[in-house]
Length: 161
Image (tube, rainbow, N blue to C red):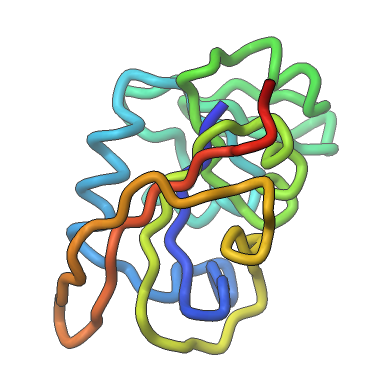
């Protein structure tokens, strides 16, 4: 499994169920990488998407404890194990915080859009720069969009045998 995330300098990912830095370049990259794959997300992440429904062109799995939850264009799973068995190694965890923390140990790659700015956040991604199990595989040049500086940083797990 892989993860894809947009983070601030302090690894914040959101506030009030919204992205801290919605960037067109990041959304384009997200779409290019995830199109045709399964994406695993939590209920709150689904509710933050346009129309509160699954993303087109992808198999959408929503992890929730609510046995009665249903939404358009998604498959509901109630345990991480169900989600793992329903996806493949090339599929993506797309958030939020608790879902990232559940699935990060099963990920071998994380695609990060790292915004070079601070923002007040109430949801965070684990800091991969401080985790010896992860190393940077590639880093783009610093880009800028609407005054926001960012770069794409891809991490790979180093402790996989």
